[in-house]
Image (cartoon, rainbow over all chains, first blue to last red; front, side, top):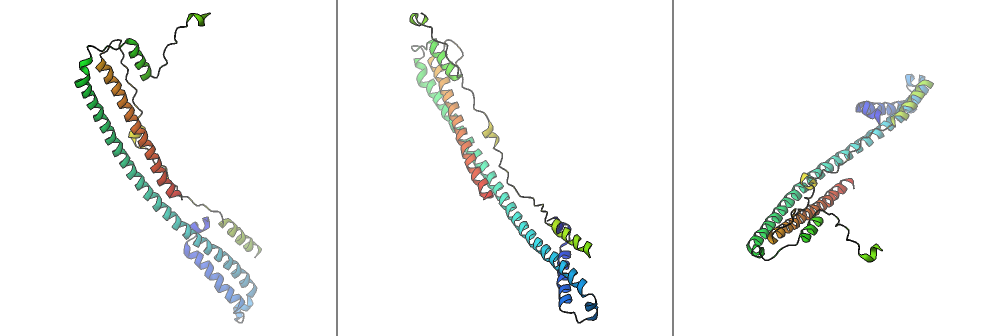
Length: 154
Length: 91
């Protein structure tokens, strides 16, 4: 409600109070000479002020409620951000450690190959096609088409 | 009096225009380490190779797979945990 943001709070209370006082004066204190002289205008203006005052007081209460909810939401968002940051750190630490383990284990297997498998190098040759097949697989490439047999060409 | 009445009615009517700014939670950015792409697999790249050398390349590629799988698992974990935190705020 823009008018609530624009009007100072005390003005709203003042309008409401003026409405109440005016209504009481206009409807109850008719025996006072000044009031009895302007009875109708006092009644109309004070009723209008009272209506506006009630409306604005309602707006103020609603604004206070909204402000409380905004504060609650801000606190919730801040807590979530902190938790999210904590989770990020935990996951990063976990993945860094895990990658380090994988690297170490891989290096140990390579050491094992050097120690245990290298002795078979002299009597274990790898055909060229096997190397090609490995490289195609590593590069996710398709192998060349198989040459067509005589039956297929006819 | 009529003008005053009209003014009051207009004021009450205009007072209803709301300008509430909602507080929104932003989905967090993923850590840099999770955004790194998986390594490409190594090729032998020559016609003749010793068996141990061949095996070392294969083992290296398995290693790269395990790295990538670990990163993928971390991605999933990150997403599920962050979504849970994010959903708690909007509830």
